[in-house]
Length: 142
Image (cartoon, rainbow, N blue to C red; front, side, top):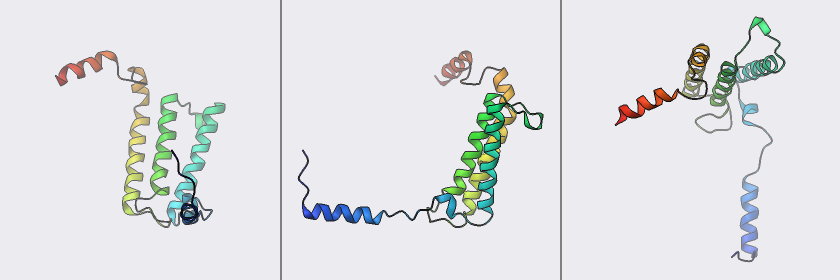
């Protein structure tokens, strides 16, 4: 049951809309310093990866299996997210040391996953652990 819109409610709603004014910039446009160039380079690298996978151009003689491609693409975007959407939630500027640490940690995880992608695929771990492994883990928890 909604109440009719009164003048006071209209004024409150108008104020709320005015306070959420958008300045027209995205968080990526407000980044300064070396982080800006890292974001630009990461974005371009991601585009090259997508074109390579989509058209099978085999750049540098490299054929990416699907798991490795997804790990690379997701890892790059995750790492860039830490630089674009910073911990302090400010309006841009330079990322803090913690943002850079999360960026580096996500790249390290991405490197590990891409290095083990072939082994994971050959052992049947592409989408989930083998059933026997899940059962042994479940039985050991009791």
